[in-house]
Image (cartoon, one colour):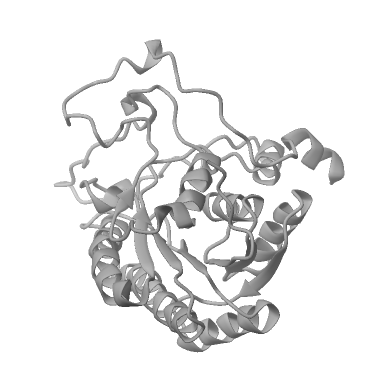
Length: 307
């Protein structure tokens, strides 16, 4: 089966250096022209550079996904440059946060607004652009394991990811009459594999996507910890996914092979979500998956040498 997105135009929001960049690269490697959006111009341009290093065609479009004027402007830029939009990937989100007892309303509202308004505005106006041009396109919202299972310490993130799960199903029903499909993908703590990002990390000795949390010094006496995470130890196949794994799946979801798939959620997590909650996998003894099919032709060492 040869997956091809040739002739299609994709817009990826939140095309920062991890999941967004990996999906954007995959869409480009499968033949799409890709518009890379981020609120940070540097992040959007870095995603374009990565695609171009790998022989693809891309453009940077900056703007806040939750601001309607910004959304209309950068969608217009994509349409002016390439005349169409076939694929929308709603990836932009505010990561991190705190638990219910510590989170403040300012952060909570901003995180929810970026997710809720960002998915709504981009989906609505990209869908209208598709409908006006007779395009039977594909919209994918990037969720999280936190959309389906409860975890302490990230109340805003859990709230908006869970809401997006049903947004996808409802939007799929609204757009089905037009032949436009709406699905979601739920990552589970993927291991970064962007050579440019890893090269930057090596300079500072960083090894994890999120650094250790520092407890605030003024917690009250009644405070109790909510629990802790062991993501890597809970994967039955013994290996975490990467943005490349995610990109392969999302590219297929956006291809014509998935023409009747809508309102569904996809995971690439080595069985993490499928397992019984109390089951502890023997991950250390797992044979591991088949070798990764890479998408990026550059290496971390080549990126370091190019600085």
